Length: 433
Image (cartoon, helix red, strand yellow):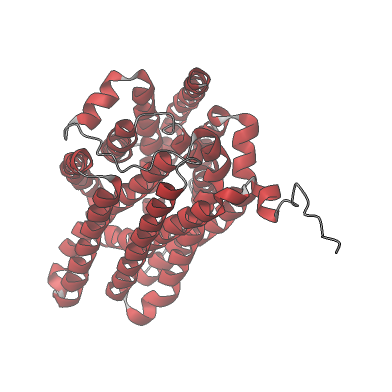
């Protein structure tokens, strides 16, 4: 009886051709993308609600909300580092996400039960908390990814994983835009909570898979990292590479905060009504995430492989130089929309995956403790610098165009730092071979 021969090299799948995904990576990759999908959907359900509550409390009070966010981060970071020092990955990630869920449930009760007279203060507390939620949940996700994937796999696959988050952000924005008028903002908090719990289940599944297939990926992560609650500060201060990442994050957030305040001023002056403003923010999110999704699936991995991490990282500062120049010349709603969409698409599609790849060669303590410090505390210090500098410029008589132009030299400095980080990353990769 004649036997059918099996080809030695089976035909590559569509994903292997288009995105460089290998067959043995599919399960962990799919779980990782779904994990990020749920984290980002959970956040983007909340984001338009947060932004509207920030406007309702007064644009002039936004700097104080950013100060409150920084203070909250200074409390959360050592607590998280203490958990990382004492527990394995599965346990400290679970406790962290479920603490966020408990807070969501508390805000739901407060929004439903409280009278209108206290709504502004609940809204301000919610603004601060969602700002913490965003950075903490996403930073923790990428720390897990850096603990799971090796450097070569991260450069190929982070774009696809990021695409899962972009799709989640798109779904979250669509849910808020379509449901907020019908069921109200408080009910959407419960939807966000459910998605965060499902994200945690994905992390559990990844943890089980990595234990079984550890030969393909990084160490399983059962080991307790050890150390102390202050390790994040110590690790960041003693490493020029991590200090460079701190500088990158500061310059990124200062520019983001400038753009956020410029957008808030123009939207507040151009669009009337809370529902219309919430819908505007949601629709901007939809455009950003739809464009980002296509780029992440089919271009990010190839771009990082061909150009390298440094040049990919530099795309966002370059767009920022062009965008702030344009907004300085035309400080109108259309210019804000174009710049906001272009900047966020470039960040999510190119610069964010490249920035996360910078952490892959580091130790586990640096991946969790120093990374969390950079992604949360340093991020919010940049917010503070941007928020109060923006206020100072307004006090000095600068208009929207003038404030935009002051951000241009900062973006140029940021561009140079991006290229320096790319060179240091290449050196670390060469030394690890």
